[in-house]
Amino acid sequence: MMIVTSSAIKNGYFDDKYGKRGNDTEKKVPLLSFPFEIAEEPEGTVSYAWILEDEDAVPVAGFSWIHWMAANVRKKFIPEDFSRQNKDAIQGENSWGLIGYGGMTPPNTTHRYDLHVYALDTTLELQQGFSIEDLYRAMGEHILDSFTLSGKYTC
Image (cartoon, rainbow, N blue to C red; front, side, top):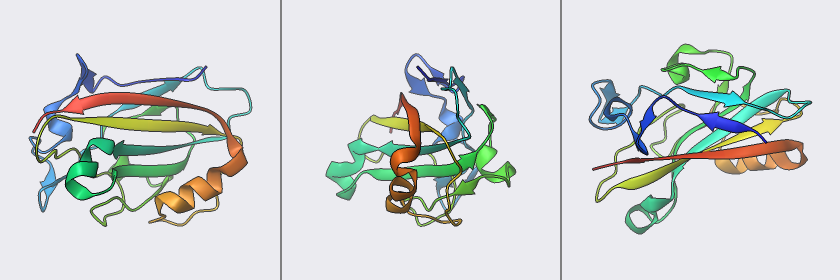
């Protein structure tokens, strides 16, 4: 079974620098993506894809807020600031309308953020700025395994 861990989560909470209390923002959107590592991936894994979402945003925004999506990643260790530094991955459009990582900014209370990581048996035919619907359609029957890593961030 695949496992995903992150040094950015301590005692169940993301480090401040990956969200609204961080110093690396643009128009109040945090841009410094957090590191994580994938282990025990299934045999036949060709690439990884992921979605970082905030389902606790539904009462405020009316939908699950998408903070980050990426596909066709071949690395098992995702370093800090991967979203801006790595040019090999294809990244989707987040709920701010930006391509890449948009960090945690809970408006009303502590929110839980889920990083869904998928091991795939292929690379996906997606374009930069893809939607979550595009990603799910492309992954289809290609998911070998998945893991959800959760952490919280306070407002």
